[in-house]
Each structure stands twice: as structure tokens, then as C-alpha cells.
Length: 415
Image 1 (cartoon, rainbow, N blue to C red):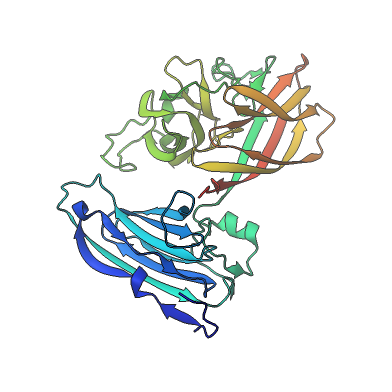
Image 2 (image 1 turned 120 degrees about the vertical axis):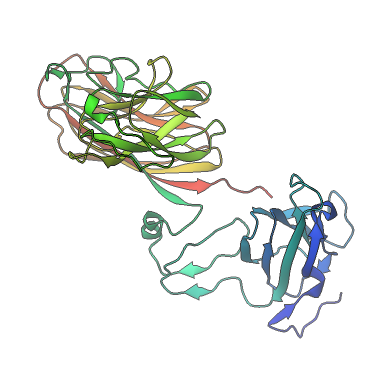
């Protein structure tokens, strides 16, 4: 196709558009190689009644499909009935559009309705927009839309579907033995938020080599749900005054972030995990909180994953594992501490090897705020945790509040 100096603002492309009912056995649709050199961007609108994968192939010089000339520019998997609307700045002279149906769907005679509309645009790929108040999906290689929103504010609000604000919060206060009410002071290293007078094993977190079955243990009997629990919590006729139900966010055996509702008690939870990111009370009796400590631990009780301390309703454990499909961008750490004496260390654990990202003295004199820029990238599967190493001194009122400010982002596509 020759270069055309008289280019319309937009052009519908029938060669890259498709509207038809197919079966899974038909596999899907693939366009011919279409010349797009006259246009700055390509707009695609796609929906399918079955799970499918959209691929955009770029060709550099001509329509010949060779290994040197065949480049995957964009790819995204869509669930059944998802609607994808994207604009792309294609950096090739020719493109091929593919919509392939999921071949694991049975039977192969299952039908799928594909609606694919493609247009070429001569406008630039950037458009201004006003303050938005709806979810925004961002994919690599799809064009950006500039918004006047504060990006940090949007992350906190959860505007971006694949990006999220992460706070790794750890708190240590004086911990009392439930049977006596006497404060127990730490003398051995512990992970911030995991020290306990009642749970004396596993206070220093060590990542498991693989996912483990998780168990729950409640110190106070009033945190054990004594009702006839229905099939879907939080239905219950429980009369215990403490915690009734919990919600746990964890990484499963594949390293993917999941959430599960838990009925309080003692025993197996029914899920296996590589890490626990957060546990919170979602239902309680007359006290409106958990009365005693509630721990999430491994089958042996030697590894603590999270603790909800008395009356706190949420775990305050400075441990975070990056999901398998994400990266974690560390921004900074804030520390406010009055402690009997010791050192606080921020640690990255990658494949079992620990890297210290920062070390800080904490004692009875530094109740002022410490702010420290981390500005680091933690890769998928790695852990971030904060350990405290006491120096031997004990006594006094201990309070350490530490927060790591971070953003969680999808992996960078390497198309």
C-alpha cells in the first residue's frame, strides 16, 4: 500500500474486524497483515462470550511471516463476556490481529460469539481528561490517557485495577502473658508484630521453602466461635463475646493473592499458603473485638505467620511477600520508636538470601520520627520484613511503630 498524504482522521478497518459465531474447535480469528503506516494509533473493541486471548502481531518491513519479521506487540487474556477497549501506538508498518479461543473449554462444539471492531486513527495517542471516578485498567503497550488526578491519591482510592498502594505496617507494644498479666520483654530477635508472651516459638519469621497448611489458634476461649455456623459466614448464632469471624489475605501455593473468611477457633483453616499478608476481625460479639491473641501458624506451631494482638482486630505484622504476578516498588520507611534497646533492620529475602535494606538504632531516646528513603524494586516472590534485635536491656514502656510505603505493580511485559 503506498504512502497516502491525504489521511482521514479515522478509518474503520473491516480486514481486522470480525463478527461471527464459532465453535471452540474453530480456534478463533486471524486477520491478514494490514498496512497501518499512515496512522498513529489503532483502536480495538473486543468482546467474546467465551474465554479468549487477543494478540497483536507487528511486522517490520513487509507481509512476509518470518521469525525475524514476526513480533508479538501486545497480548491479553480475556474472561468470557469481558469487554476490552484499548488504543495502541503501533510501532510497525503492518499488523495482524488474532483472537484465539481457549482450547481447554469442553466440549469442542461449544459456541462463542466474537465481536471485534478495529479502527485506525491519525490523532496522537494522548488525550487530556478531567478528574475521573471510575476504575482504570492499564496495560503495557496500550496508549496512556493523561488525567489531572493526583496519582498517589488514585492508588489509595483503588482507581487503577492492576496497581495498588501497599502499607507494610508493624507495631510492637509491651506484651503480657495472658495467665498472669505480667509483661514479657523480648531478649531474642523477633519480627516486628510477631513477638508474643503466649506464643514463644516462631517470633522471628523465616519464609517457608514451599506453601504450608495453615492453622488458627486462639488464646482466649471467648474468641472461639461457639455457634452453629452457616454455609456462608458471617451467618451464626454464636454467643461468645470476642471474635467470631476473620478475613485472611494470603498468597496461595502459586504465589497469587487470595482472600478467605475464617470461623474463629482452634485447628486447620483449610488453605495452604506461602505467606499471610493480613488478618482482620470481621465479626465479633459484645466486646466488638478479639479479647486475646489469635495466631495463624504452621502445622507444628514453630512458624508464626501473623498475630492479632488483644483488642486490636487486625494483624500488625511487618511481613509482606510480593505476589508471583507483581513487583513491589518501595518508596520510604517511617519509624517512631521508644524501645528498651536494640536495632531495627529492614530485610529483603530473595530465594532464601537476606539483604539488609536499612538498619536503625531504637532505644528509649529516639521517640522522634525517622524517615528513610528506600526507593527500591522488590521482585515477584521475594519477601520484605522488619526484624528487631534487642541488645539485652529490658524494662520500660515499649512502642515501635514502623510503616513501609510501597506500590504494587504488574510485571513489565516483554512482548
